Image (cartoon, rainbow, N blue to C red; front, side, top):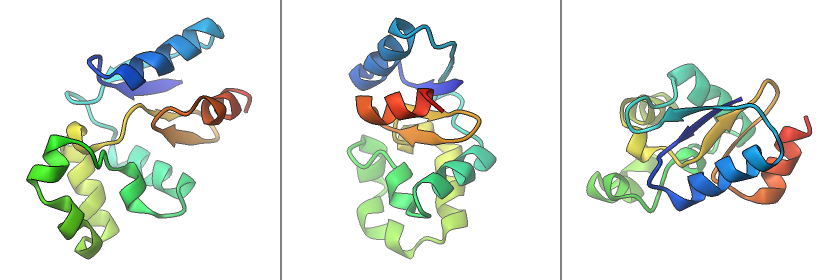
Length: 117
C-alpha cells in the first residue's frame, strides 16, 4: 500500500499510526515532492464517482492562491488532473490506493474498510 502524505500534517500522522497499529505494510511518499501520477489520480477519481473536487485540498493555501474555488468548475477533468499531478500541495491528503480501492483524507471507518479488502 502506497500512502502519499505530508509529514507536517496531523491527519497524515494519524493515518500512518492507524496502519502501523494494525500491522499493515505501507510505503510513504512525500506528496509535495512527488505528487500522485496522472494514472493514480484518474484511478482515484473513479472511486469518487468522477467528482474531481473531492481530490483537492480545498483548505490549502495553493488552492486559495490559485482561486480554484471559482476556477475548478470550469476546468476539464484532464486539466484538473494535470494541475493535481504538477502540484502535490493541491492534492487532498493522505492519498492512498490499494489494489482494489482508494481514499483521500483520513476517516478511520473508511480506512478500516480499505484495509479489509
